[in-house]
Image 1 (cartoon, rainbow, N blue to C red):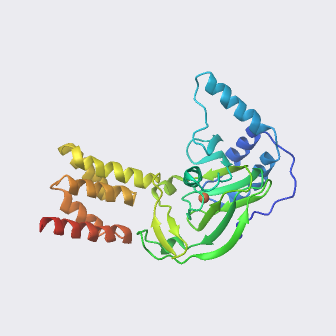
Image 2 (cartoon, rainbow, N blue to C red; image 1 turned 180 degrees about the vertical axis):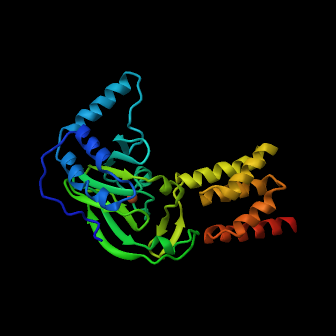
Length: 304
Ligand SMILES: [Fe+2]
């Protein structure tokens, strides 16, 4: 399936409230066709060249009045959503500031030149400017275990850009891309769709030269939960160990289970061997892999 969504060349502009209402009434988060059917709605919003300035003025006025604005990062701002499974967001895309320190900070902040897939569906339209350029690949998510260094079959889908009025759709988990900084400042509008089950799943950073997984983004929900579980192993009490054991053996997110198992091992908890045994017998290759890694680590530190 092509990533460029074919739409009419022009649409009558609509207001943000109308766009939000239409998404709210139409969207079935798990259904890709329902997301794609909203391309004309998003493009109609992008045809409105006034709403974003009004919205941002409103946010600035709120900010000056001591309120909380939705300008939550240097790159993104939330325009609306249902607070759980979908969000309409705006994104700023800056041209790189030469090649110095600022350019490398911008590359990191704007995720330029970092091949990744998404654990959400993303329908996006250019609102202003020539837009970012992107190189695209696809992978088979079912074939991925999720271990750093793992080779993944990446099929090149060429390059696209996101100028004003063009609509792209990134399939969850399957599409991998690199974004390059635009020639000129640009803005895109996004519909992000995240069914609850996706929040338990991984997205990855890839090395497209070697077709390998490099790791996961630091802000991945599962990675953050796993880090907290592991951290608790340093200072928790007996009740913490009981809770970590329950999480290690039954949580629906594998990275959370792995983190809790690591926490139990760090704490030298009596439940650790049983937790390790449980992930070793999991049907998930990722957990079985790390059960072997953790067992080997435990064995080598016990024999020091
Ligand atoms: Fe992306």
